[in-house]
Length: 100
Image 1 (tube, helix red, strand yellow):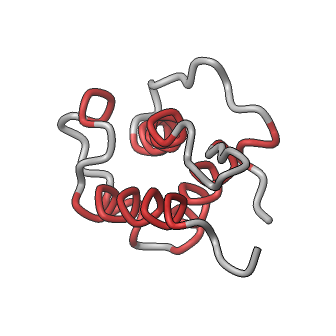
Image 2: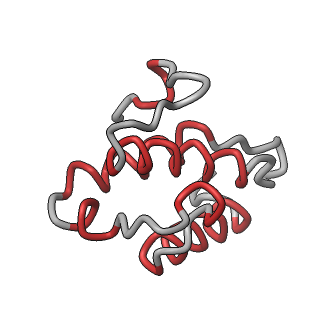
């Protein structure tokens, strides 16, 4: 495969748009302006994209199977980063947060 499948690229594009727009998982992040916390330093934004990409599942035809799940797990990390009282359930597994 020379390039990421179109469905994967579209999923990443929408994720980046919602993230920058402040509209990632509005149910979980309603009222939390996470953008200053993520965009001030690159490593927090890097972690958000790592979680999204690590959780994202793609079938043999290059179709994304769980964009909503990947977005939700990234949103959980954002919420925990911005709200010290929030507890991620289930807790992240090492493979979800691994930087490649």
